[in-house]
Image 1 (cartoon, rainbow, N blue to C red):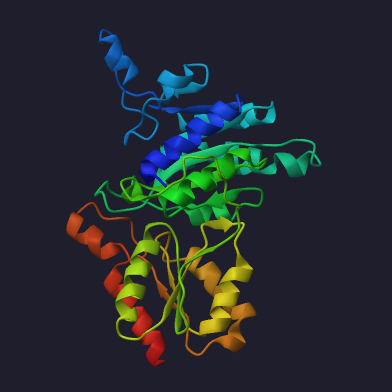
Image 2 (cartoon, rainbow, N blue to C red; image 1 turned 135 degrees about the horizontal axis):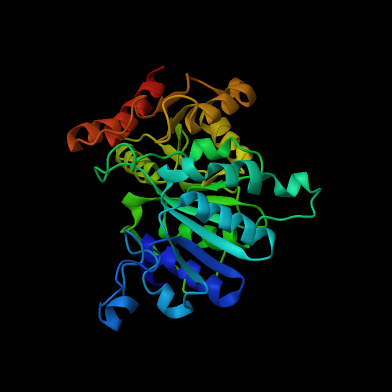
Length: 339
């Protein structure tokens, strides 16, 4: 099986679905990227492909009718995608940074998410809104957030938060094929992460969690980049005879409640790691789920590891303190074992 980066897996999923289904189109700013005017033709062809090069080469392969470079206008990007989806296309709209969803949210939250319900199932909105999430690049408060928790509050939206190259390809393919709008969150710190990715087309069902480590003493529930930190903690503690199970939900709407509760029932101790928010975030939602449906299995209070309730700092030193760390996760695990 080939070793590919997270970035390459995203691009491969897009290319394979575009080859398979001519209704799939890409819409977004800088998808083709940067060079024009009097630049040499080869520079135009081999342009950037987004701020981190994810879509580089797709314009060359599929042309301007299917890779649509837009101005910096997120409201038009998502509005265009919602209309295109309602009329039979399968658009993949890129916001570049997911932080920018605010100026485009009406088309997603009040339109696309409600099409199927308001038209009695006769209308579909098969669109995907891609965007980068996450801190770690010192990109400051407006380019470093992880607002997946906000999207998950909206009935009609599906929300995907992949952590590995294998998962990002399979989940993106499944999202493009889904008949409902999907918000697809790609952590910018994972783009260079390498892993095994099949060359063939495959899909991963939405709403099915992945157990990245199996254990008996404590369950850690984590998303996206936090999964890898949780795995580090599990591997370190295993050397001390502490058995840690790591659950990666992969999607938070739909959420694999059964898989989460099954793990909690088997260990009785839970740590939830979340980069989205210190208030009303994913961690709080899952903690409420566990407290309401698996309280009888708990041997200790549920521990939450989240950022502080502040904007993401620009300072690299402060940003490092803001992001949930391996050390904080390990401390939380040790605490629930003592309680």
